[in-house]
Image (cartoon, rainbow, N blue to C red; front, side):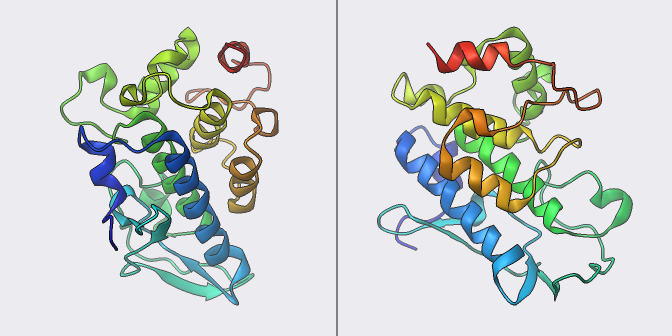
Length: 223
């Protein structure tokens, strides 16, 4: 592909992907997963959704690549058990217990990718401080503190759509092991670009609770 893989634009200082390019890429990858999980005649589980497998054409439209680990099964069938494969930071936690790849485990990986695209940071950053090592934990600390200026990739400055950033962040943060959305729901959130469409975030350490943590997002959207 003319522009190579997405990861090189997220992890290098230059060039910087604009916000419209980032959001279009997320929508494109989400649509690809919807086709694989729902719209094709069989269910295809990719099993390795990550930034380096997001390939960009000359106009920065995305293609989901590398199907070397993919599994196929009929709609309505129970996915077969297999060895857990994938990439650290994108790997759904239940895979280590069940060794069963599902559409939900692909959605988990995609959620990690969404957060990476919004924040410009890897899901696991080996060189970060201990409290910033895991992206979801670092973001949750910012969420509870209401520090929204910190979460969007600093290379964008103020040049991004705040409401779309919140939609992306909330869609990605729903990869937490409670309340994972289905592929179709993620596509709807990103296509709509409306923060009110996305369910409230759960705490990473507690059960899902509608009452937690919406004020910070509301303040951020209405800056």
